[in-house]
Length: 375
Image (cartoon, rainbow, N blue to C red; front, side):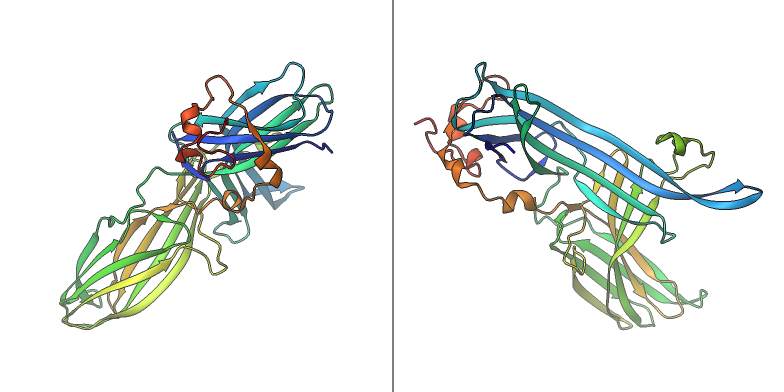
């Protein structure tokens, strides 16, 4: 195990596609190992996997088998040397500031697994991003390495601007034929997008001009995960998988994430109500974010409806956009004590940071950078 130490820190834990990432690689060289270059790697990948059932003939009998489909793709990869030392890196403490521009339109971070509609076939999917700092060691083939995950979100407003209202109006018909008057429902969210883990506020305006009572208001938060282009047959995978002639449909996985029931509305009355919807599971785990990758798609919607005895319910459907929760690894990170001994080394090339930015707010969350980091 190397006695040398390495750390990497970006200026934020969460980004959107096209944004610039600023940060620093920290290095403590305290041994005589031949370290000669500092490298930085950015990587994003997307993958999914699911099981499917097929029936095959074996020894004259039809046997049910479990097959597997998987997709894996690197979304982007960037690797470059920050600095190189011909005679090896001298013993000491170093900080190498850098910046890097993420590519546009990256799908949001995602990671989840579960079972499909048959309650037995498993699935898993993830879209993940990371930055890795490395030191190359001559001859030994060893690499000193530190990895920091980064979160990518959709480039969407997280302001308090209310979402667009959705409405429905119907004539209540008892036993599907006897008209008893009209009811209407207008629903909207208090924001256009939410961070996973917070509460979404659903605002309902109910007008009951009918001659019957609305027994209850039922609200569901629904999630639909689609793996690979839906209904697309693909022969990717291992050689064993490709021997199958079964037409395999891509999974379409709906889940009820939350159910809330409130009192309804009396006949010939109006009612306005606000319902708080917690965007996390009972266990406290935050909902996975909305995303739309090449293989993995996750969307949410809210289904709000009136429950009326002996009549067809009145329902509205609202799209719900959820952004990723905070990057726990980034926010919980504690800088090692040796890091504050580092001397800033300004690199050259396209990933160098202008000196005037090192003491700015951009580097406020990157330890060791003051107004004049070279003093």
